Image 1 (tube, helix red, strand yellow):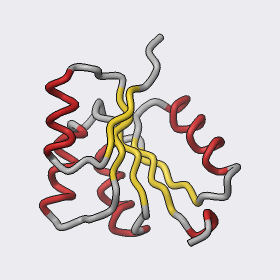
Image 2: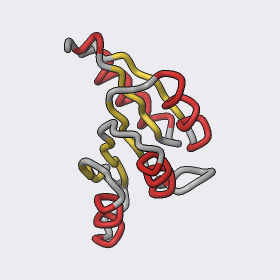
Image 3: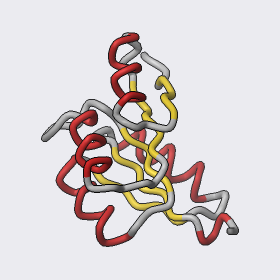
Image 4: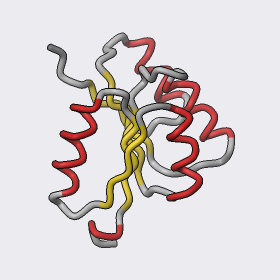
Length: 109
């Protein structure tokens, strides 16, 4: 699979973070979709069938943990990497237990 055929969904409510990821990954040839909230993310997963999801936990309309749990309950096997500014151990463990494939902390200001 070439990078041009890999679809990545970025789910984050912060436009600067989405832009940074879109530009960085887009220049490598990945096809990028963006969702600023959970509702949009749910629709895009069904419509676009991404190969990878980058998920923030702090979304405006639902918790990222709940979104991840819903996807896994539906049988979605797409790799999900959590990108979050939350660094509490319990939140990290919860995300991994819910089926996240990895957890990466965002740099904090």
